[in-house]
Image (cartoon, rainbow, N blue to C red; front, side, top):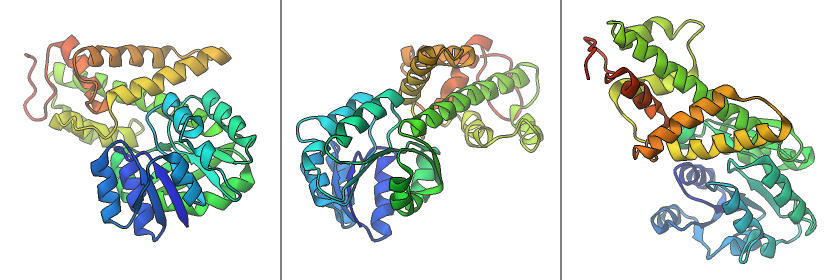
Length: 301
């Protein structure tokens, strides 16, 4: 299939590479020229903007940082809306506000272009190996047409409901992930502060009810002090902002999400915006005056 792909960041680049490897013909665009060059070296074609990508493709995919970027790429000058043609389908795989998904969908529908919102979960490692989870909102018939393409990039693709439902599911995911990381950071800081090796505690509890995919992905990073981003703090701040805005709009109480969002603000202020979200442990380390580490526990900074 001919696919336009806009956005070759931490997630978008490996997603696009998996599509090329599967034999699809890609037309790519991004501000990062090194990312574009890498895709071109694999067989993709560089295009000047989203309009050109849409005009050349049967399916156009965006993987962008936030709502304003999606609106600009979809509806702005040189955007997807200017490259609309019969048979084109648009899938936005960015994590954005559900109301923006609906706004963009409605504007494109007037031009006859169907759109799905299909945000992803799993971080860079799962984007690389093609095992992400994808949650999709939009017309079911359109979903059925593009599901085989989404399955190239994912281990699990789930249709959730009408347009915007994919991003509602993603917001729920991001809230759970953030709170889970914070809970892990809190618990293992407790273990070390109480004189018990946090790595031993992790091994003891990971197979029980407290165990989770989040724990297995993020606690080893905390223990190794490896905060290379799989998913950056500043992006999670953006997502939790969308969670809170959506919650306020429907009167859904979100006290735990609000607290973790404020903890991430501490990290942002400390210059950790580009660190992995496992760096939430640094907030607890600051409060407890320790540095989390495996082996002989230390109660001193």
